[in-house]
Image (tube, rainbow, N blue to C red; front, side):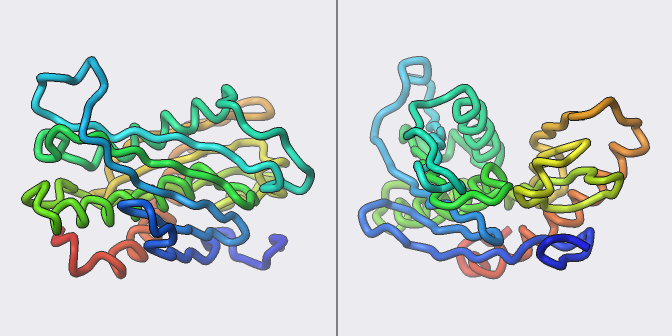
Length: 238
């Protein structure tokens, strides 16, 4: 029995609260069970030096955890190695579903701030970042800065692991901290892999186990994308 009484293949409840921050071009409070992340999308009409003159845009991300996002206070994040790795993951994931040429010469910053952590903060950040990004692009379209929303697929992410010898989907903190195998999977709405991050915390694992974990992750991501489709059915005609 899981702590929150879910079945092994059941994800936590997902809630997207769009336009959560008035000042940002796009924003979302995403709740994945008890994990809560504020994601904002901000537009800069400039590009990094390495992209200037290449007739394309850029999407990048920053990630951090607030001091009391965990059970005991942590120091205010100054881009630790963990945070740097996670924000690069978020940026890569979001760029994978954006046509950067059609975006034009804009940089979109996705800021993900964890206000409460109970496992799955990086997967929640990708979900919330996607929602904030699409709303940001819709605003650019409405103001005439771009002609169409340059997003060609939906994007989902979920964790999966082996805990106590059992395969589990969408690990919370108590499960993640005990996992023998821990994996984060990012896929698009064609169910193509964008990224797989997997580690055997204790020992090793076989390809058979890997295949089962990826199949379960796909099942969970299909539910994530289903929730995204509900809120963007009138914006993303894909």
